[in-house]
Length: 152
Image 1 (cartoon, one colour):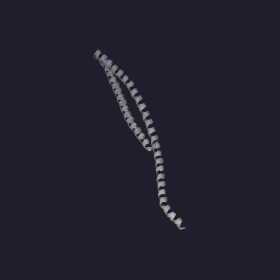
Image 2 (cartoon, rainbow, N blue to C red):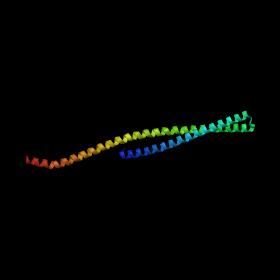
Image 3 (tube, rainbow, N blue to C red):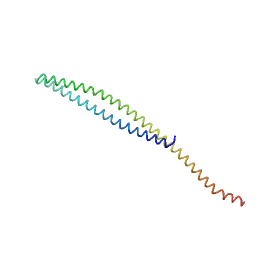
Image 4 (cartoon, one colour):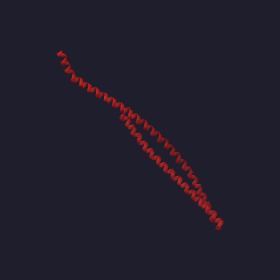
């Protein structure tokens, strides 16, 4: 494979690395938002359940305590649903991290191969230049050599 072809392939893989990095960053942000939401729901649930208990102790209306407790339980259930969303986000993050690592390794390998092919092409080009230079020198020297041979 020529260095030009490897360079194009390397450019393509670098583009894929950037794309997957962006996707990974977005997936991590989504996971963080889901975790934050779950924490908020759990905090609100705890507050409502504590409010229900305080309401029962202080002798407030039973309906208030029952409503606060029911709402707190619904919040706790919704927080539990966020756990499923978080696990999906975590799975997506792991997949993207693995894909990114694979692409980075591929990029590194292609970069080494590209450098190796470039060095080989440069050696070939240098040999051609050396051969051309030698031909030019020989072409200039041959008439002189022929003249000297005639003189002898």
